[in-house]
Length: 95
Image (tube, rainbow, N blue to C red; front, side):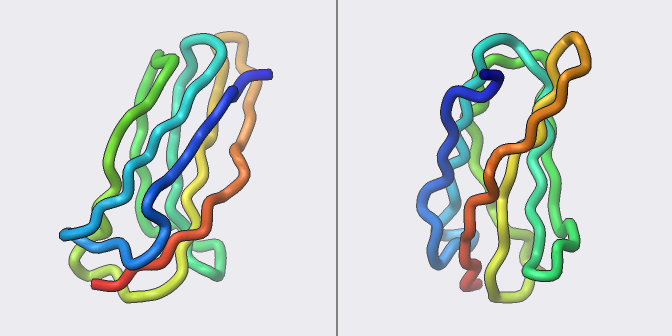
């Protein structure tokens, strides 16, 4: 198991005043790439962390991101090149 746990909270009414906490844990140090996708699967935002066992960050939607439903997921790559993608978390943005 590469990913041991992950969460995004809150998942509703995310805005600059109500940011989403993104907390993910891996078994070992890995490279992380988080994608925020719209309902059509288009990437609208990304953020990356290299060589980390844990990620604790905040996601604030860009000011021009329309209100709606989005999905946040983590793509993880281990040191030996093994890749895993987390189950996407559904969030709503209300600017």
